[in-house]
Length: 331
Image (cartoon, rainbow, N blue to C red; front, top):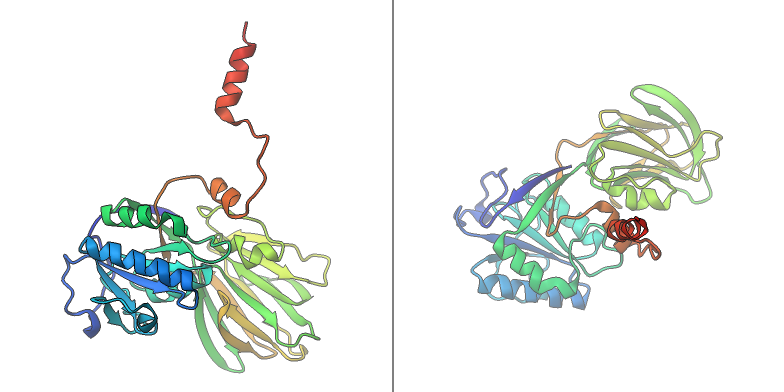
């Protein structure tokens, strides 16, 4: 994970021509809004964000698929494609983790940082809550945030003679297509066979995704700054079928054995499904493009775990109290 400072007017460095944004100057501050418009609270929060940004001369850009639900005047409307975040200094996402993952599809190649306002459930990728809207917008206006680069996965598939490539921020999961059947797979790491499993599926995850699907499947929590790839089997019928953490430079792969009835399905971040026929091969490597997340405050990942998972920590005395206790015992 790499942290870099960001300031007012600083836009993504990777740009390319686009007719839809050709009128924007390099000095104009622009923020893309991505919103879960199916949630009334998300719409309300997004409108509040847009109004405050506009009042400080920060232009607001909306996706054409969401603009009618938000009904904001003076906002620029652009197609919901890979050019949507061009020359935006930030993409503010109002919704849950699913909305942030959708927004990541728009920002990955141009390097625009994402800042999430959680209007969902856990919202592990989000940085703020709806109650923090005013302070969040003020931080955006002041440019008082830092940007973290998060590891991604590149996924290559060969199935029935056809090739497919994809990517994921959290995880790429291979799952059985038929509920009543198991996947029969051979697992491989760095071009060497590791084991054969009958299972419901396998999750390949990043450290960022270790608190998502991989966590639910029994995988370890990995701190975001750790450079590693995770492989977590789902309900595997095998003696050697434990979660594994491999080098970030490794290549993880599985082959679905020909006798597997029904084949499987590949999901990247729970999106973009690809059918896997018997005999298919899936390879997972470190992604070429990072996802950039904007952070408003510095703090250890431990604190985020405690807050997001509502972990019980009562009884912890803390360093200051321990020092006082030692001082009180001193003669």
